[in-house]
Image 1 (cartoon, rainbow, N blue to C red):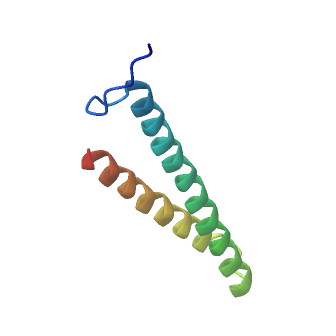
Image 2 (cartoon, rainbow, N blue to C red; image 1 turned 30 degrees about the horizontal axis):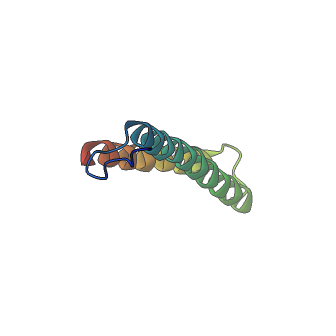
Amino acid sequence: MAQLPDPSRPNKKLNQYNSYLKYSGLAVQLLATIAVCGWLGYKVDQWLGLKYPIFMLCLGLAGFAGTIYQVYKSINRE
């Protein structure tokens, strides 16, 4: 007769998948945030007719900094 898993013991394999999904989600969030902020900065630069892409750089770096802060908070939550 097969034994049922003990619900009081966490499944090690399930925890590995959960952490993998969590951190891959953070990576997607990082890339998407930088891409959206950079695109918005590019559009602002076009709208203002600027020769140097200052808003694209500033918004891209701001998106990067904000996402790194979010990753830091997420890691320290554990």
